[in-house]
Figure 1 (spheres, rainbow, N blue to C red):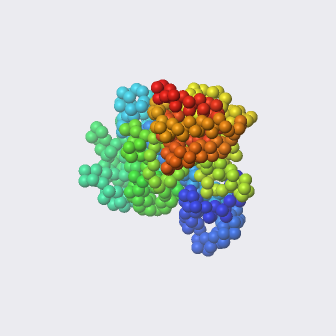
Figure 2 (figure 1 turned 180 degrees about the horizontal axis):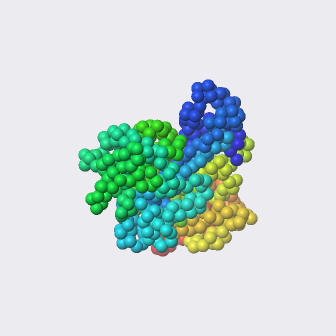
Figure 3 (figure 1 turned 90 degrees about the vertical axis):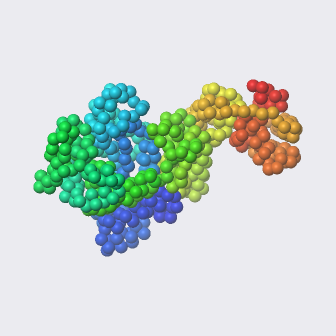
Length: 559
């Protein structure tokens, strides 16, 4: 799938390839000595990637991509983006290196974090209040399905990611701490405690600075994750002393899952212990990345290559917030749009803030379909995949050959004009427009039809506002009716569109889009619409004539 792309991948301009090239530079810089780097550059420049990996064993170690999941809540829209975007960079890196350098995406669940706030969208909240501040893997499952709330959310996460076909390795913070995987880096932090404090304390307020420690001990008595200062350190025993909730001085090892690191040192420890090479994060975490990178270096590690993306906004340009409940949920998007349209939305312009609300779904869907069509056209004509096309990234290097012969916006208007409540009604029109087409032969179109019905019922129908035509518009629509009646049977969309254009020009609409706006507002009850010729070709000339006559008679406004 990804073989033979290294040369075009080196020239690709899309952001995942830009990041992939930076990542490859990092791998060569960190893993190879000067002479080895020169050899690697020569071989890679000659598209001998596999030979470079065979010759230089350090290149055969997996390149680690990582993203995090806050296990105190359920998977959501941001979770999808956290995994989808680094997956796009990983796919680009695989293409750049012809899959010769192994890669691995770790989805790391922060399920050892203390439950500081009980979510609003779960049952049995009183039970969770009793378990507050315990690691989420020690909090009872309010749904009664798993051994803990953390295990429940982890299972939901994995089902969520598996449903989208992501290739990933799941890691649990609780299991990683308890297994000893982090013991080495935890002992290093104990040893370099003062160096870590010197980095962290200037970033904190006076009150927090007075009691801050990178170690959050887990009380042996209550099981809660405590914000307790470290009173003593014993390097020879690998322990710290803190004051427990009952006031007693308590000594615990920093290893074996008996303490949890504060989140910035935890990030740095994770990068160091897992040798993470690439991680993405939101723009709001730029300062945290900077601080964690300094800690990582203090621990003897090398911070990963990072990429910051802008945050989503709601329709009022307010930052999306889970606590506010503004913006779109994952379930809402997938009621009205395909997973591919969501992946495309995550792909486009990650450095620009984007509004995330219902109206973006039809636009994202049609843009995705347009890119998929362009990709397949380019693949046929150039006999090579156009890898800078967003569809290549959305489909992880393997876009399907079939798209949809009808746009989503056109389907929406067809649903509106036909007042279609089922896909069967829509297919009665579609099968006439695309001879021989069936839901089985056009699966993408069939899926879009279902989404279009949902979107129309929930958003378009309640907002429809028909108006009566003005005198000039009435005369033009009467002329359009005569033109349509004179067209030959089976006239195609282009012929119909030309007729509509001519009527608008004859009526001296300036600009011409005012003529199309009038058609949409008078006939469809909305300010915008699809290419009108395509709509008429699907809806049928006879039915369009009936629609025009009803509008001229005032029946649509009255309804």
